[in-house]
Image (cartoon, helix red, strand yellow):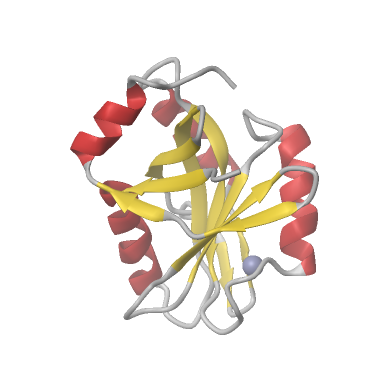
Length: 162
Ligand SMILES: [Zn+2]
């Protein structure tokens, strides 16, 4: 299957700004988006909130802030859902840690608006590469592609419920 992950330029710019703000420590946030038959699209992301705890090898989100941002961003339309979280790895590889995998699976049952959520891990400044992981039976690694707002509008016409 050639399933794709697209990240809007706007969402990537938000990730870049957040990563630059916290060099040497992890940061992250929620991701809201929609899906089409062949792709998952990350349309907007947030930071982790003012009470988040940033450490070199972990990030603890400000849960109240993240919940508020999810609700705000989902209000953009019926197709938008809380599809997962992103976080940065300033030092380690762009692979989910054991704790990342565990919280990903738990949150797929308790937090996310889908049982097939996405995790994005961002590398450090200046390149800030992204790697995406889709939870299915296992965890599939997919390299995300950036899309401009025009492409996103075209994809939104093919949005399906999930
Ligand atoms: Zn991690």
